[in-house]
Length: 69
Image (cartoon, rainbow, N blue to C red):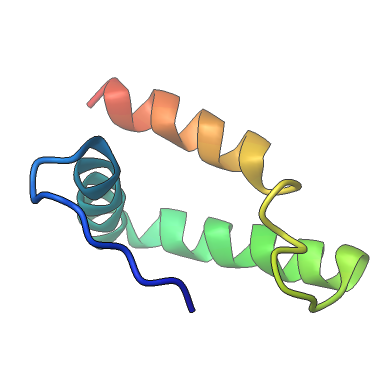
């Protein structure tokens, strides 16, 4: 597991917190994200970082939708 040391206002921290808060407010999206991850695990297997790249389209779409809130 990576260890990140970042300032509280770093763009990565803001992004992670925004994602977390969005998911807390949208339980239906949590289920959708779980489905995406399960489907990818069935396709690419369970290796370190295996689902990072394939899930990018979902996360980019989600970021666009979050930005519109």
